[in-house]
Length: 216
Image (cartoon, rainbow, N blue to C red; front, top):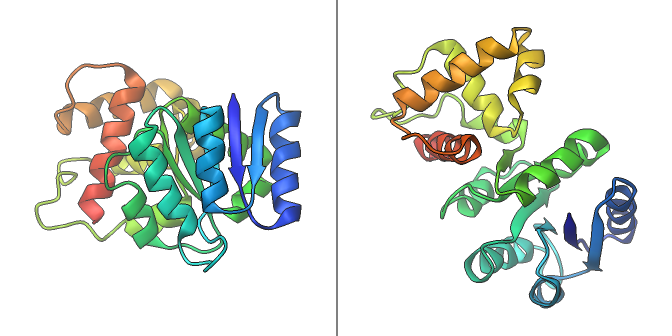
């Protein structure tokens, strides 16, 4: 997978580069601000851009703004945004136009190398990944006309883990159930959310988007 990294902290930028290259990915460019990110993405057209939210010159939301531009102008490039803190409004803003090829993780998750690399792969392939802490804060904030109201408690748990980007196997391990049981719950979720038959990954993204919108 071809990756562009945007991170102004030199140690983290170099660490991400080494980590991804050691796992077989190609880092096309590693830059320090939003403008350089947009130039690098336009030049290399990577599968995914890994982007820090706060970068020079103001360290407010330059990365998020650049991510929105990438999603608008190069929709085939996935965007995985990294944040120092849980900022729900940024996650919701990032997902406003859809959840396909989008991820939002806390920087601490990079320490879990396997999970971080899996998140990069999933986003690069058009899936979605939300940080568990973001998902946790969203739970319990559903609207009165919540489209998720028809889900069982177990289906709700499965959907939350789907929002974190977990595969059926990983969900089964987390919930200590069989993978077949998870598959049945996922099928139930698709049916209750009226998601018409389509490729599995596409329906997972739509289900996650429904979850996010119900919390907005």
